[in-house]
Length: 337
Image (cartoon, rainbow, N blue to C red; front, side, top):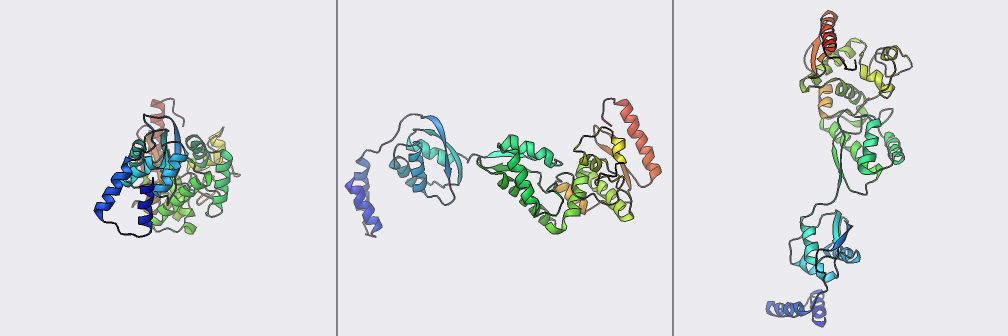
């Protein structure tokens, strides 16, 4: 390998070699045998490519993990390719030819874990989903949420874990997951020119709209109802806030409506509840900021299958709509009223 050493010294020392000489030297180098595996390999290993890793770093990692047999088996093909190395976790078979390892580097996407948080999910639903999809522990998630809550205006972090699809690396921590979700909410608020410190009422109202509306156009009308009630000092009288306090489980909802110990009971207490009751999406946030024109003070769904909803300005109109809702329930037994 003396010729290879001479070439390396020439490059490092800045010695200028003519192209014919370089070509001749390269021809001599190619005669030397490179240790390389043959076949498809067996087993797999995960290689982590860090931010800032160079080709040499990646080659050494592949050799150390026994993906390739020698440094030159992978590094020389790298030099002859247009390889761009992206950070991430990559899965490689063990003991494969350097050319095959290079193909994986050039064509494979980094390994990630995907998790989708639906709009309207509550922390009590988000935590089990993250445990299942990302193999995180409940304790770590709860501790991360508690720590993060100190930087947010609500009584809990409820409402500030933005609902979206996220891609995480396999070794992601609970703290990193919560950080990404909360930062996504901060960016969403900024899109509507809302500062985090001024966001509690908005996110709380948006979370209620998220729970009450089903059809896109109704989000803005539901917002109208609640905004009009707030302006007039009326009770919001929204069922999801009452149920939130009981974590979705209540033996008698009618008794719950009169429960004065429930600070989220909008049938007893005027104004918004102490904080959000779910994670609102972009549409709910937009609707909270931009209620539809109108004097609506009431609404009721009259078809729980389609979500068809009637909005009313007066109690008399609303009572007629409620009769349609009750009629639908009679004709569709089995629904939980």
